[in-house]
Image (cartoon, rainbow, N blue to C red; front, top):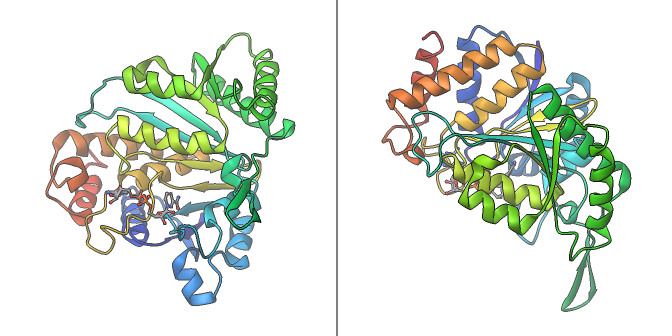
Length: 332
Ligand code: NAI
């Protein structure tokens, strides 16, 4: 099996290599096709997202990707945005669930954040009107809105989920979120067997902080989804744990929610579990559900045993020690 591997920046190489080791130890033979993106690519090729990288993903269809650094307020446009738009990876899926052995304020959180990945404010369509005045375009289109809501319902159906919550701010952004809401209601009509609710995004934030267990599948536009994904990660033990998938009709790129973590990069302190769990989602995607399950079980065992854990999990270990434990627990 050939799969594209983008190590990315900062802690990217450390965590992706750890994930590859665990997958190999699980007995899966993957011929990793290395491609470059991020600061490393910018330095090496003068282009943070070289055409060859996009071509490789188009050829092999699936990629595992480490985080890429995006300079704030200057330099190149976000690689992630370009990658998602260029490959039409219209859906971002982030499962947020409590894991045994990780102390969190709530038990039994088990929700999935589905985020529209190509439009909204996050698409970064901005221009300067005159010096001191800038304008951002919040693009919402009917096809993209319907597509993501249908995706969320289909996901709910496949995974035996009881409810889909559409999160919006249609009371203020009457036109853009008004259209999105109208599309969500229309699509929900096709799924009378799945409960549908609509809530304003501020209300969802309040309720997630007070009782996240009430939610199941949440679907929303791009920027809301970006924020809610990190909030979700915070509810279940932090960015080192939460996996993610960017899915389109033809291509799929799997990556953790976290970024390149420049503060700990190169120190061997990064937690590889989030990218490993993203790789588990990837295994499921390519029809190796049993391997995905094996990896998830190893993660749970490792967290429960509490040996070799990295600092973000309250341990004193390193990327290397936790990876050893994950490998050891594959067979457990
Ligand atoms: P970040 O997620 O890189 O770091 C936030 C905090 O979480 C830091 O304290 C970091 O040490 C910690 N952290 C993150 N991942 C961890 C892990 N696996 N193990 C242990 N601790 C971990 O977010 P930040 O600092 O806002 O972004 C840094 C860079 O990453 C930026 O250039 C940003 O644009 C980029 N980024 C890239 C993403 C991607 O490629 N998918 C996603 C998010 C940010």
